[in-house]
Length: 113
Length: 441
Image (tube, rainbow over all chains, first blue to last red):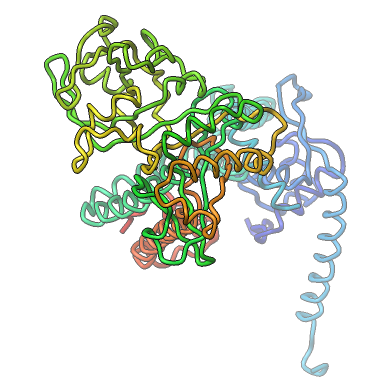
């Protein structure tokens, strides 16, 4: 499984917010969407999704409503709140800065030091 | 803002705990079903698809509990766990538990006792009709050398001496009471009473000891206290010709006669003087004094026979203008202030004093005056000036004792907490443990 990566602690929330920002999803849908947008490269333990979802609801970043899935099962659908949208923007910017910094650090050659 | 949201989520959690638990479970099951649907579409049998989906999901119980925690903690459940833990720890350290329980009991007990006293002294109005309308009469005199320079020869009661050279008291002679009673413009009614020390009471097949409250014939009428059974003492009981009657308190009725209604007309003996029971006072009424809870109410005129003075056997205090002993409560007319009442009655009070006191020559230079004060708590009122500072002091002390007890217990528990734990959820839980189990070790 060399193509898959364990996600870093703290990044699951960001991934969930991103997935939900593309349209309301139920929990299983969030999982599929994360797989899809990360090109199946990230491993998430399925059950671990739910404590994270509930935490985001409690923080007011997501809101949840019961609805019916595409194959007619009762499921809870999540969507971003305004606060969630703001948080996603901030976290994404932070992540980009961090990734750029780590990337440039790792790219450093001996002559540049 | 964060704290508010947290509180809301906690309270919501407690209120809607049942729904949450079901909701979470349903949602997790829906996930597994949806996953199984996908696998079924990919060609697995339904049973196999569901088995696979459950495996992929991971530990169902673990994630369900984690979900509850994420929703604000399953408060009631973890509190119950904490309580069980506390009980286990207490039973493991019975010595420590006994110390903890004992010192808490002492601390709380002391506070309760002091507060009961505060309540009786400072807060509780007597259970009578319109207690705010009642006034307690008193007098004040200039003094220089204490008791022997007061104008009255004998005084049954406490005299307060202030630093400014004023003596105050709330006892009057019978002559004063009768003279003041004539002033109908100020008071709707004035009545008098006197507490006597413990007496022997024989009745039924029982002997009890209790305080006697001697009352003027109109006492129950002026206070507006009814009889629970039979009748109260009435003005017609005042004339010397009437048969000697007595009214029982609720506690004596209970202890001596088992609350039997047939007590009316029974004979009891008080200090070997036979009296006829005519009624029982209302259960809520405990006399006009502080914490005395008299056993019996009897007409004042019986005092010389029933409680004769040791050194003056047979002599009636009623006939002596020089003996100051009865307390006077009055029901003031609406709109009359205490100062107006005192000013209006002062003349009669001083005239009577001059006419009846043996040492009336002391009156002018010592300036004796009538005082009118609130009487809704009976003669607890006169205790105010003396007891308030003391009561505040003792209350503060009792409070301090409780604080010390708590600090002590915290001290006993705190170092006993297991070290480590690390994350904040653990710390919060430890704090809760201390809360539920003071004897934790």
